[in-house]
Image (cartoon, rainbow, N blue to C red; front, side, top):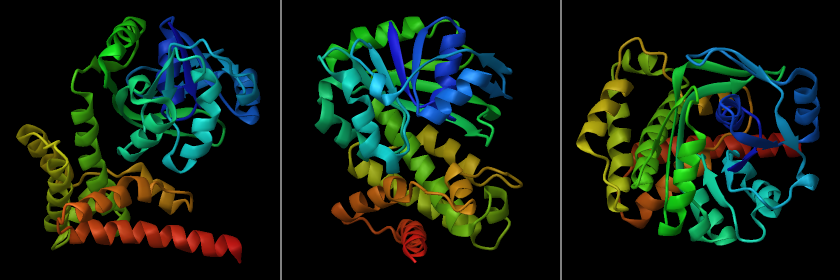
Length: 312
């Protein structure tokens, strides 16, 4: 199985690198500067349960991409979605390969389906806390490193089975699911709650629950997000909700979303993709979601301010 990974950053670089470490045929589609850095120092991963890794990985630039890949792992940021679709289009030519997206939320699926057809877009979720250092090292921040994937059409089942074979021996957890879209919605509920509340409060979970109304606001936001998922036909299971409540109200927890790091560093954030899209669905179903609305508006105002300052 031939695998193309879009980017070699915190998500694609980590999981693609671990697969290459285990012997899978993995190529990274990267920009020239990243290609130069990887040629000089290799693909580098530090920290976490899998241990440190440095390997010489295969890379191609956008101008060098050709068809022939069985799976394209799609790990772009939502705000780069348009250019990312253009980047992988040559690899998808000829009608052979499938895309395996690891973006958060669900709205990117509509864009992928429209561009390549639903029969060629699998479902996937990545669970990891990682970041790319200024030196190009992928920093694995804890021991969580898991992916789930599965078919959204019957024709994708053989591809998923082959991908499962390519993942044998990797140093991360993985699971093939028949109901992968449920897992995608479950993560969206958690991430929208975590990103929404930590960005809105500019604080970690433990700091928020240490306040008089913090826990109440967290649980209210979680309930709003779950209500939207239920209205869309993907009710969050009771056991999953119980786990989320525990995670999001743990005293002393330093749990935050990567979106908070993006905001605090002055970078681009996926507010519209994670929060705005969920709020739009709440409005479609007539669901009152005041905390979600406040969190989404906060990120929308942050993006508007960045645009204004860039133009001035």
